[in-house]
Length: 131
Image 1 (cartoon, rainbow, N blue to C red):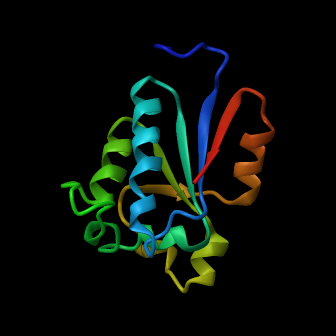
Image 2 (cartoon, rainbow, N blue to C red):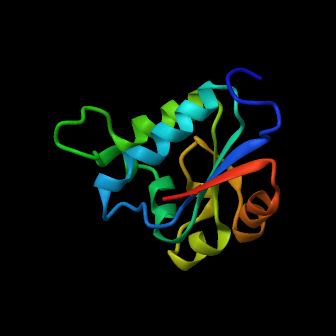
């Protein structure tokens, strides 16, 4: 399983404060996800609260973490996905923001909310990060 001990089952990342209105906070979670996935560690990124808006077509493509950063947030998300990270949308957050679950970017691989994230957090073989 690469660099990480085989006892690690995966890394679950919760995006809570990382949202479109704070683009300076958006690159780091995806860089960490890409790094872990490149090390053959399963990675799940849970989009909750206002972060689900990043999964709406066109939103992440317009955002940059910095004027000096050439990549868009969507580029960073795609890089994480290209290494194997899974993007999961909270259905309650989608509903709260009036987002149609069928109209998300193709990089989103499914749904996952509080129960799924907490199952990962309770599993001692998984590591969790919250951004």
